[in-house]
Length: 541
Image (cartoon, rainbow, N blue to C red):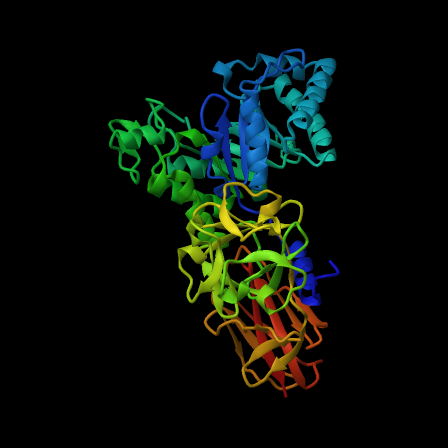
């Protein structure tokens, strides 16, 4: 933290304080289907490996395909995706294992201990309980007893506890369960044999559980990647000629791209995520339903879970403790500089669609589509100059390129590349803001740092301030153009020495800032909203 400027420190603090529940995209991966290396990890937040089966005495049956689970965990974690073990499932309607162990204290203790050991053995992030249909009465109470014990043990270890529950009619899942889990996945499908997962049923499912008191932050809407009554995957239906945007083909009912997008919007409005059964059933390319979900996520969040410091000028440091250099655009980039001078400083630019670009000395970093070492010599932002900013669990960040590869420092031994398929240590970087804001250049309206790097004001199209200049003892009105009423709005009025004079949370598109206690002078207005930072120079007369 010592290397960060006060501005960066403030932004980090504010981001932590104002963070809301991130939108979840959870995909089930069965042990019997799907390729670990074909998963679109950048579009997921969690993967549930299915299924681990319990015995009536609290034991665990041998996991199917353990090597696949191990590979999934390592690959998912390298891509900042959590992995949970899913216990139970349909299992031909046989819940005897759960019924038996939950009713007996000794067996229940055995089960919880075995689950803890399994989670630790495979380095998992939690457990997903798919006891979908507890019997009413005693089994419903036993479910609560089991989930209470699991909740304590998982949460004490920093692990997740989730569950899969029916879309509607889940009376055997008592309301007291809601406080025990991190979230519930609503199986809003298989309602009948044809119209098994309509938009209407999705809405009914959310209304049923929300009406019973399940918080929106714990409500995840399940969607199917298959059709009924044939149980064909979406990929199989498309291969047979089905319209990827329709919901019916050859008397098979399924969810096409249009319905999947509508359901994702519904989940944003009334819940906190989407769950998929299951990933291997998806089509590829432009017909991918996961990609359709991701497109909706980007329209709502810009860059979900990855709060890139838009507008900041930063340095990047590799795991070799040396800085990334643009080489002034004259040669391939390297990660071998001992200090961050002009060539080692990059402005983070919003490239649209949840992507960012990196600009140094007026030119943009290009991945070169992975075909050759990366350079910083482009005059405009095209696809090769767009990157996904990924926040890693250890505090570093990774940059994923348009080609799916990650920027690599190559440990400073050779020119940097963008063809690595996973984010390891060479593909992880520390970053920090350059200098500290210390002066306002009145003639240009830009904020200058002590190191003469320029941080541009937010364009007028994104935020407006009126009047400016403003009279001491008066007020000015701030208007946000790109506003989301589900995301907090916070502002800070800062002195040129970056001391906060006012910090407020108006949570509105239009709000007023009073200058009654502010002396004449020049100030910095900083507004944080929707994963973006807006900066304006304010003159008080």
